Image 1: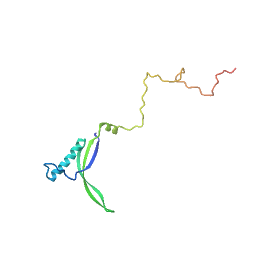
Image 2: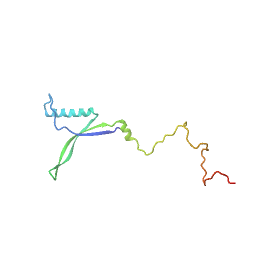
Image 3: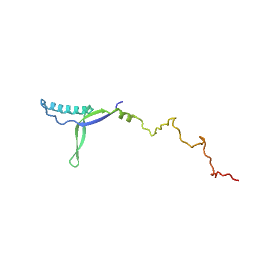
Image 4: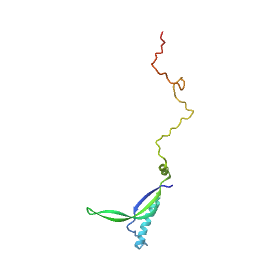
Amino acid sequence: MPFYEFKVIPAPRRGEKARGVKTTEERYALALTKLMNELGREGWDYVRADTLPVEERVGFTGSKTSYQHMLVFRREIEVMAQAEASAPRSRLVAVEEEPASVPKLGPAGGAAGTAPAIGPASSGVAAE
């Protein structure tokens, strides 16, 4: 399942003048075409246009609702970011085992697996 990031920008308010483009509709279409082509080169796909209400302040205490025309674009997030997002988060740390050819360090000359004697320390001298 692909993951997307979105970009929402205001629609152009005015058209652009160009040679051979005479009507208001043609100028606006030119401005919109340039904007969409620029975002397309950056990898953004056009999704839709929306008109959304925005509450604005008027004076000190008043407010009014205006409507803004927005363009919605999306692009797929890279596969590496998808793998990180979908990988389960774990607090366990993987421990690598040592290869069998590496000798393990331990007491020299002692029998493996024997525990030291418990009790008072002895001087090592036999009583006469």
